[in-house]
Every structure is written in structure tokens, then in C-alpha cells.
Length: 210
Image (cartoon, rainbow, N blue to C red; front, side, top):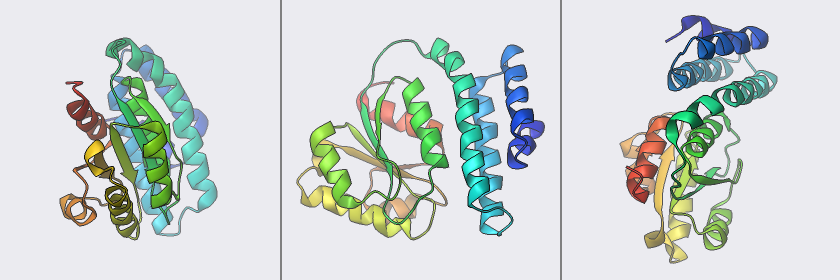
């Protein structure tokens, strides 16, 4: 872990953070470890937001920093993954929640691991998930949520998928915030992931990518 990078991101030092990432990549650092530093930094940002130290502008800037860092890291990850194609993943932050930083990390990691990802964005209704499953025909549905109120929305989405007769056609994972196995059981999902790499591992396991 690079405390320097975590602190630079968490303190909104955009130029310093990007320079550190470039330096670490050039020196042969593990790109996945850099992403883990980003995840830890975003946890700090999230806590500061909850404590009213940071506000929406800081969240937006953090998201932009993450996109810039991801763009630097992506070529290095692609080199180690290869070209084998896996399945299709439908991804979105559930209704009532507009947090997208964690979701965007999951999207990025699935993409560089050769999954076809369709990201529905934030505040996605249960009906929208059902409609997209019918048209996109994913192997995996990933429901993201940071707020505790999102747990009910996750449950609503899973129930809507089941009521539409689509539950046996997809595997459903949830993640974000303080999601744990108790939330998974409540929502009726197949699994939960603690981070983006866990999401990749689950998706590979379900699609024969392991």
C-alpha cells in the first residue's frame, strides 16, 4: 500500500496523485495494488462526505481523478489478462442511490478482464433492470448501493427479476457500502462482493472464466 497515493487522492491533490501513479507504473508496481490504494482512498472520501467534511463537488472530483488514474492503469492490466472473452454483465446503482465511484471501479475491473459490461448508471429502477435483462441478456447482474436504503431497492430489483420469470437466467451479485451476507440474504442475491476484484472473481466463476 502507498500511503502517499492514498493521501494524495483523499486530499484531492489531483496532479500529485496522477504523477504518483505514473511513477509507480513506470517502476513496475502492481496495477491491481494501485487500484486497491484508490479503493482505500475512496473509502476515506466517503467517510469525509458522511461527516460533512466533503460535499458533492469533492465526490465529483474524486470520481474524475479515478477515471484519469484508471486510464493510466488500463493498458498495464490488459497486458496481463490476455484476449479471452468472458460473459456479459449488467451493472447499475439501485433506485434511490446516486453513488457511482464504487460501481465505476467494478465496471473498470470487469472491462479489463474481458467482460462485456453494460452500465445503467445510478438510481436505476427495478423495472429498468428487468427491461435491460430482456434486451441485453446478461449472464450476471451486479447491483451496487452505498446507502443503507439501497438494500430495499436491491430486494425490489431481485423480486422484479423473479416476477418477470428471469431469475433462473442470471446470477445476481450485490456490493457497496456495508453490504454483507446478511444483506445478500435479505435481497435474495446469489453473492456479495467486498471489492471490485471480488466481483471479477464471482463473474468468472459463474461464466466459466476460472
